[in-house]
Every structure is written in structure tokens, then in C-alpha cells.
Length: 458
Image: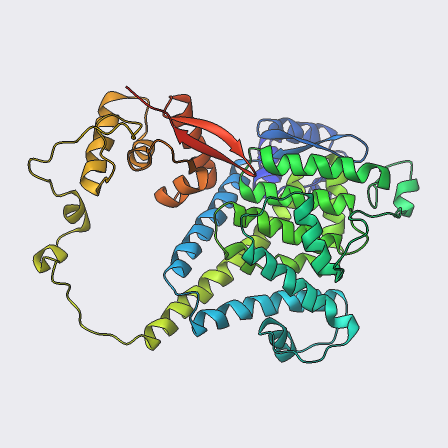
């Protein structure tokens, strides 16, 4: 097998470390092969603004297979969001569905701390029916309180106030004297001269590195999944808090994904599996990232876990739909204002049927001249065609979105494009940036995301 084939195999088919390549090939003489692998990965490398404890720069390698895997997970997140969006969040059936996921997450927290608990006890915490509890089990109550906080504060920015609120809940301290760790964490590895790794950041570096992290969360132009994994690694690297740094990292991951307009779906995803690591696999991967500066090793480990988590949510959503249908009382209702004949036409004919003698009216509040305030689908479709015929640089999806999202004074997001078109985040980001470059939107940074405001056009 040629070196180029090996580079693709050990980067695309599996994202292997040098030692894994050596083991797979049965030889330690792989200098030339490894050089070629690094060269191949260089085509897909992106550098991050985050600096390691030794001030080395972090990077990511978004190979075709990793990018496609991330896009697939995002599509499933959108699918789950749409499915669950049809079900009333106040129904008892949905509450049971949600409680099962939270109880499973608490089970992993319990296993980390070697707490002998059963399912009924975990559900009593989630149902808020637990009456008495021993001090060692309060970590479960506190962790669920943090989950509920994320659920009720989905738009909170990720800043020091956010970390303080979450850490206060996790630690059970109403009034924190200090937020960040005040004691050094030492390890044998820090004293090693070769292959040095750090157990945690020195306390003198914590505030600086957490500042870098918050800046990265607000400004980094990566997909939400990439950003979430990077933030997890960096928080575990720093260990900024006296206790619960891993739990804080997981909760921050979830909040980043909630911010990406996936609604409450990320809160159900069982990232807590990373808390239970009997083979110390996660520690090994994090050490590899620290030594190489390549976060892709952790990203490759995250993908199967995230995929399994979203598959469980989708499977549960299908069963939930069936239960909801069983509970619904069906009545035969035909609204008087619906033409029964039209109901049997293809959807495209119902939506795009022409509206006779209906000219577009000028309204100065719209970015595009000739667009009425109360757009219906027929108007939007006509504008979409007008855009396609007058600007060959536009893609169909971009014209479709802009025709329906062009009101002066409003702002739109990448997540809205993704939700409207049902595409991956990276596709949505590229499309919105393209629309901005063509002068349809003005791109601005607001809190933890980019917003796009329509620009008046003549």
C-alpha cells in the first residue's frame, strides 16, 4: 500500500496516533509514513486561538470523513428537534420521556462517585419527589439542578457569571468566596522531561486561559459540535475549579449546543458517559491532544458517543409519537375555509398556485424593493425566482432563504438557515456568509453567535 493510501487510511478511515500507526503496521520504522500522514492532514488543518499551558497553539483537522460525520450528527439533531417539536412539552408522556434521559445521565454521575443507587431513586430526584438524602448523594441533586438551570436559561451568555451560577449549583454553595481554583494540582507527569503533560493549569494562568476560552466561545467560527468538544478539552486541561471541573465542562458543552438553536435536545444527550472511564481512555486521548496540540483526537472519540446519544433520542422520539397518538382523541374535522379538492393536490400545487392579478406592492421596510410586509408563499416564490434570474452568483437555497427572511430591522442566524433548509451547520454558515459577501446581509457578532441583518437594496 502506497504512502498516500496509508495517509488517507490513518486520517480518514481512522484518525490514528503515531503509536497506533506503528502498531497497525507492525513496525516502529514509520518516519516517512508519518511525515506523509502529517502532510495529508495539513490540507484540512485549522488553527485555533486557544493556547495550551506551554503556550503551544491548538489545531483541528477536519478531514472529509470527520466533516461528514459531524454534518450527519447535526442533521439528526435537527430531525430530533422537528420530531419533538410536534409534541406538547407539557404532556405527561413527554415528561416521562425526558425524565428517562435525565435519570440515565444521573446514573453515570453516580457511578463516577461510586454511589450505590437504583433507578427509582434517580427518578425521584428528577421528579422532585425525593424526601431524604445522604450528603454524599447531594452531588446528584446538584447536578440535576444545574441541568434544570440550563433548561430555564437557554439564552444566557457563557461568561464568568454563567460559570459562577452553574458552579454554585454543583457545589451547593449559595455564596462563592472565589470562583476559580486556589490550589495547585501536581502530578508525576509534570516533572517528566520527555513527553511532558500537565495535570492542570497553574493557578496563575487560570484566569487568563478562561478569558481565552470565553473569547473563543463568542468569536470562533466553527460548527457548534467542534466548538463544544474543543471547550470540553480546554476546561478539562485547565481544571479551573476546586471540584467538578469535568461536570462543568460537560454542562458547558450542552449549553453551547443549546445556543446553536437545537432547542432542548442537547440537554438530553448523554455526554455523561465521559465521566465513567474505567479504562482511562479519555485521559489517554486528552494527553495525546496535549502533547500534539491536535484536538481532532478527542473529536474522533466524541463522534461515536454523540451519534449513539442522538440515535437514542430519535428512537425514543418515534416511540413517543406512537404513545401520543394513542392518547389523542381523534375527531373528524374539516375546517369550513379549506377547499376539500385542494387537499388532494400535491403540496407544491397547493402552495405555489398562482394568485391572479396580484402585483407586488412596494414597502420601504423591506430590504428588497417590491416585497410586501405580509409575504405569503406565492410572493416569496416569485421573489425567489426574481433573485435567481437577476443574480447568477446566488444558489437556489440562498435565494429561497433570503426571499423569506429579508425584513429591515430584523436579524437572522445561521441556525435559522439550517432549520429552514434542513442542511448541515457548515453549509448554512457558508451560505449566510456568501449572502453577506454579496451585500444582502450585514454580518455582526452578538454574544455567542453571528447575526445577519438585511441591507436595504435598490
